[in-house]
Image 1: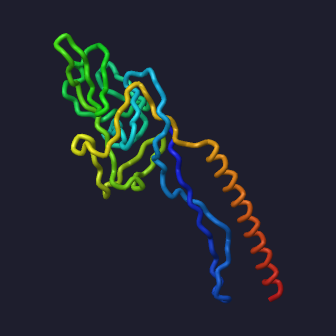
Image 2: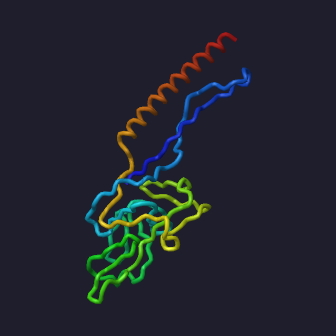
Image 3: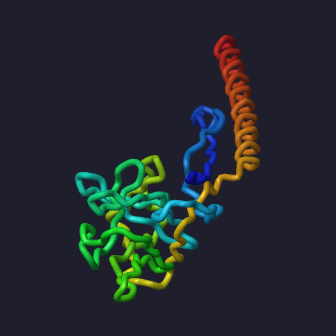
Length: 216
């Protein structure tokens, strides 16, 4: 899933103390924040493919136990009972039954993340997938590949302790990119034109400064 970023542009000014004014040297752009708007939900065939309809992130762990957040919901069940994505990151969840005892058979994931398996004795709850969210989305540190590192100075909430404020988990579905290609192309063209104009402004300023220096 692709996440759209918002770009901010700032003027670059060169201070001319002799004439008590600033000279424009063009503009620079920086990533102001990340747009976490809901992407389009598309159907999938994977039993552990999941999309979050609303707020929240999945929690994943690497082999060293480092914790990250992600909206990417493509996972699969391994022979040892662990649930990982294609990059090998482990899905964080509360196990009610040890994964090696899950056995075979279809599993249903509820909107609240409970993993239910139907047995001869009735349905049993194998575990619960936990969603996470932070009080300040802009505090998340992008790491690439749809992963984000929570800021340790900002509160992190989970769907077990705080059920309100989290979206529903939808099984057999994935969240597509929230990137609007038409808008992105338009923004790119606008940025290119802005850069071109800024470059011409810098060249003009350089020519003027050169003339002034030659006069002196």
